[in-house]
Amino acid sequence: MNWSDVGDAMFGGLPEYGAILALVSNSLWAGAVLGLVGGLIGVFVMQRDMAFAVHGISELSFAGAAAALLIGADVVSGSVVGSLVAAGLIGWLGSRARDRNSIIGVLMPFGLGLGILFLSLYDGRSANRFSLLTGQIVSVQNAQLGWLVAISAFVLVALLLMWRPLRFDSLDPQSAAARGVPTTAVSLTFMLLLGLVVAVAVHIIGALLVMALLVTPAAAAMRVATGPVAVPLLSALFGVTAAVGGILLAVMGTLPVSPYITTISFLIYLVCRVVGARHGRVVRQRAA
Image (cartoon, rainbow, N blue to C red):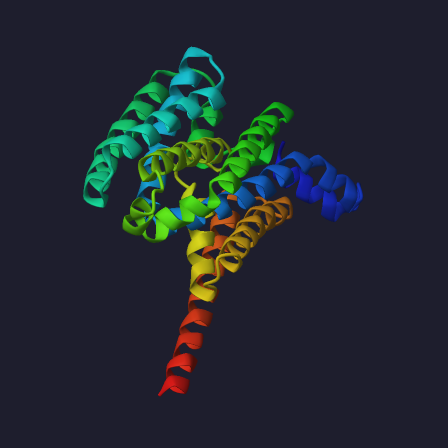
């Protein structure tokens, strides 16, 4: 689908706006689902100080997708395999923050190097190569949307089932372990869930931009809210707003969708940072 043609058609008055939205319905659903799940899991990513891990997993996911593209296999399946391998290694070997960061630092260039190698050996369409880095949300097919919805639904249900122990372990792991929470199992399960979300996010918005929906919305929400319910809801809202808003803006222009999503996400963070700073000053002045 050529988005410039869609934009010309809309402003040229040929089809109605509802018809334009029907053409991009898969993209809108994909953006909404990814923004919702990414915003929710992103809260735990921030609480567990694992923003760097998201990027590390995305590099192995990119390598898996590139390998699948090279051998003619399903790209989503390759992305999922790469993400789960990375998430499992980080969760298993990186129990401490120092170990985790060093492992991620080793995995990132390795995964990126493998991905570049596989893409250099691929002699198909160059657009397929580029989409692994920057995503292809503008051309989400029914099968891809089905994968995204199924994986996201599984992750969402799993998050809800383990919400309380995961939150306890994220905020105070020592106390959680003392209270009998299986912290090792919780951590490894969370990493695998994060790997699944990263896999579908890489396929939709690309390995280079995945943090825009898995880290930035949660970071913004934590600047203006503190409650156990307010932060996840606000993070999910910011994620959906960035993803869907970026798609709707891309429909009306000629630029790719990714810059719109990342820009909206960044602007939301800036606004929340300013609001949070002002609120903090008011609280300190009242306390004084």
